[in-house]
Image (cartoon, rainbow, N blue to C red):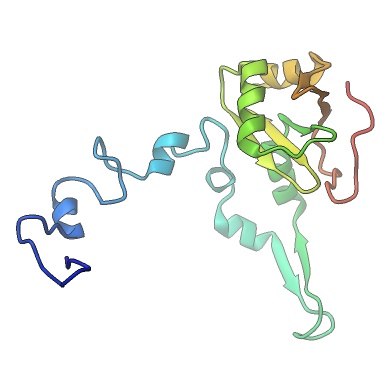
Length: 181
């Protein structure tokens, strides 16, 4: 490793990536145990929430999908997804809410922190940023999902949260939440 000032090398301070790897962990891993940081945080499967890759086999999905170009290869593609794949994907989102904080631009981390503070989930809870200031909140435990859905009205950041159950028909680019349970 060179010195920017004059290209000097210090033999006692040079460390290569293979040197670190030979000591039991890769340079990007924390020193306490092997494995990626992401795997440690989510436990390999989104923190207790089912991961689509664990549920749906690539071969199964490939068999259930078709890609067509009715106007030729330069035209718009038409992708058809089989009902079994759609049902499985919808099942993964059954304990999900759509949340909006009206009149506020929220970061995902600020909202996630506030919701965890308010709802105190014991199981996993994930927050996904959607277009137009919507967020999808996904719960591992159905009872925690139901408590968040029906326990309101919820107030955060000096605003009432708009909350509704997720549905496959919800389109954040077009839809709004007009009432909450």
